[in-house]
Structures are given as C-alpha cells and as structure tokens.
Amino acid sequence: MEPVRNSFTVDLRRLGVLRELERRGSLARTAEALHLTPSAVSQQLAALAREVGVPLIVRQGRGARLTGQARVLLEHAEVMAAQWERARADLAAWEEGRRGAVTVGAFSSAVSGLLPNALGRLAEHHPRVRVAVVEAEPPDLFTRLDAGEVDIAVAVDFAAAPPHTDRRYARTDLSTDVLDLALPRDHPCAGRPEVGLRELAGDAWIVGDARSCCGAITRSVCAANGFTPDIRHAVNDWQSLAALVEAGLGVALVPRLAQPLHRPGLVLRTPAGPSPTRHVFAAVRAGSDDDPVLTAVLASLRAAAAAAAAGQADRP
Picture 1: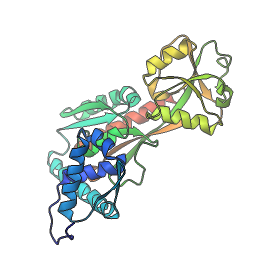
Picture 2: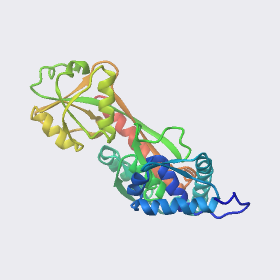
Picture 3: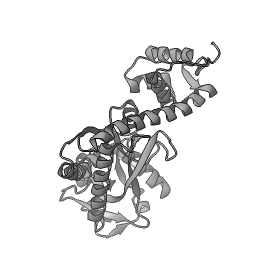
Picture 4: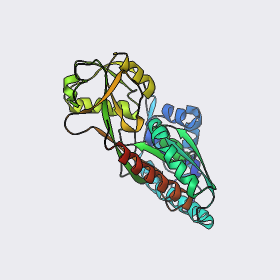
C-alpha cells in the first residue's frame, strides 16, 4: 500500500460503500443492501484504499472488519457529507421552499397514521412541493437515506435505528406512540379497563417479525415484564393481526398510530402500570436540515404528530 499522499481524490460513492460496510458488518450484507455483488463491493473498497493510500479492511474468514484508518476516514466522511448537504440546502434556499420534490420513507403505521394528515397540511400551505412516500424500516430506511433515495426518514427508536449520537443525521422528535393490548372480546381479561402484561404470559401472542420495530418492541416490553412471549403467529400487517386476535388466536400489542382497527370481536385495553411506548422521530442527512423544502415537510410532520397525539389521548 502506498503511503498517504499530500493530495488525493476520493470518490464519494466509494465512501458510501465503506459507510454501509460499517453498518452491515459483512461484505455480503453490504452488497445486498447496495444491490451490488460482493465482488463489486470488494473492488470499490480496494479502489478507495488505493485512493487514500491506507488499508481499510482486514479479511476474517468469509467476513471483513474495518481498520483503524478506515474509522478515521469515516469520521472525515461524515463531515464531508454534511458539508455537501449544506451546499445543496444553500442552493435550494434560492427557491425559499416554495417548490421542490421530497421523498419520505416511513414505517407502515406512520404511513397510515401520520403521513396523510402531514401531506394534507403541506399541500395546503406549499402546493408546489411534491412528495413521494416509500414504506421502509431501519436499517434499509437509513441505507436509502444515505444513498439519497429518500430525503426524510420517519422511524422508531429501536435496535436497528441509528443512535442519537450518530452525526450523519439531524433528528426531529415527533411523538411518543402508546401501545395498547388487543384482546379477543371473550378473553377473561377483556372486561377490565386495565390488564397487567404479566397476566398474559401464558397466552399465545401475535407479534411482528423480530426485525420490525413493533416486533422488536413487543419482545422487549414482554421481557421487561418478566416473561418471554409464546409467539404463535408472526404478522406485520395490522389488519391481519387484528383478524387473528378477533378469531381468538392470540393477544397482541398495537400502537395507537395503527388504530382504529374496526373489529367487533376485538377489544383494546390499557396495560397496567407505565404504558409501553415507542418514540417516533424524523431524520435527514446532516447538513440538509436547513433546506427550506425539507423544513416545510418536517414542520408538517410535527404538526400532524401533535394532532395525532391529541386525538389518541383518550384511547382506547
């Protein structure tokens, strides 16, 4: 490997591959996320290493780990990416937020429970801003945000989401979404206004995939209450989950953003004690938070989240 030169040219796209490898942890998963072959990922990283003159990865069997030099480079890459986004925001400011196109990526219940109100408000005040919506969850959602495929990511804080300290993103807190218990109408606990989660340790549970935000949160909430749920059905669609609960096939935790479910054979009850919640936030690439078009969309998201929270206050 050649020594670091006083001047070198770096392809920002190759830096993006290195950033994705840091997130995914393996060449195969990085290739899958970027829609490349593992060979193409290796070639991109090898070319980047030649550009900067330092080793970036160390092979470990079938996997690879980042070198210390790679992590130093990534720290600078975050600064460069943020500065590029600021440049884009400054150029966009010439339009003063009156016109633009934005793609919002969001998890499923935000798509149904938050975005219709937000985009309606936006259309009223900024009719020349065009918005497209993509349904996605972390980590894929943030891979798309990094790649510029989405401009705003609406997500829930859980293990697959980036930490608050991640300098690649500027975050906007939107709401705290409460989760209620969904029970069959003839369940022994259905007649009570509050039900302890621990009382349902012996029930069958209907839970989303472990990689989804609600699937992960339900598992952690049950663990915090001292039991591992007996998961009989793994379902990510809320209406399908409600149909299974109504049929008496299990119990579930349902976020209020996904309600109402309109099932006569299903009841919603408040868990006893502190309510289980999930924290909803929006993120943009660091440096782009001054973009006037993104600022307008984020303001509409905040207003819609506040309205949803006010409407949820008296549920279930």
